[in-house]
Length: 231
Image 1 (cartoon, rainbow, N blue to C red):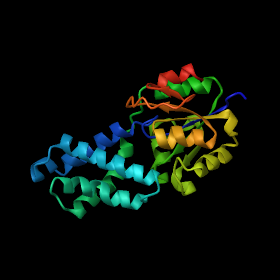
Image 2 (image 1 turned 120 degrees about the vertical axis):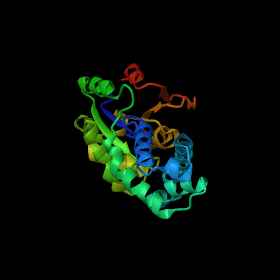
Image 3 (image 1 turned 90 degrees about the vertical axis):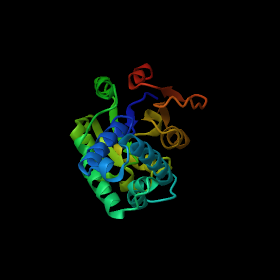
Image 4 (image 1 turned 135 degrees about the horizontal axis):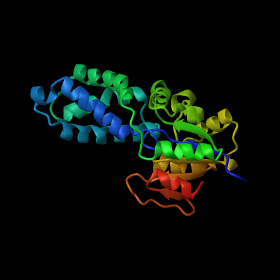
């Protein structure tokens, strides 16, 4: 059956969350004069925060914690690592991080070009994101990519996150697509690559970190432009 629907993960597949988060936290760090007040180097802080945030998101994906736990702990735990036990400061960073991150809207290299390419080839495009519903659509709108997509599915709307098959079922129902004519492109091996293939959809693993993970028959790319080799 001819492929007709292309589903994208959003964060770090199209919308450069790593870069935009880095810039947002750097702004807040400087605004609060953290280096002078607490003698914390920003690059060291960001490295610790990044690792904590990644681990917490993995736990959200696996259903171990909810988003409120993540919001309470990612900055608090990062500051505590440097000996700063300050819930008020952590809350300030969390609230302003979510408000301000959409003021930075850098896309992953090649994103717009690939979206134009797929649109020109008459594919119908969709988003399936594990992110928070309240920011997913804002990211798409403010970065200018929203018009490319027929549907945008956020995990909060479904109540489960990838790789849970219910979110794929929901998104396909919303898009009126059949799994046999659909493919998912994403950067998370478990949530995207394994989630889609276990559900019965074709998938392309966007191997950003060159993890070199393999499953027989599964397509993999290290740059978005390589999508053109498959579609």
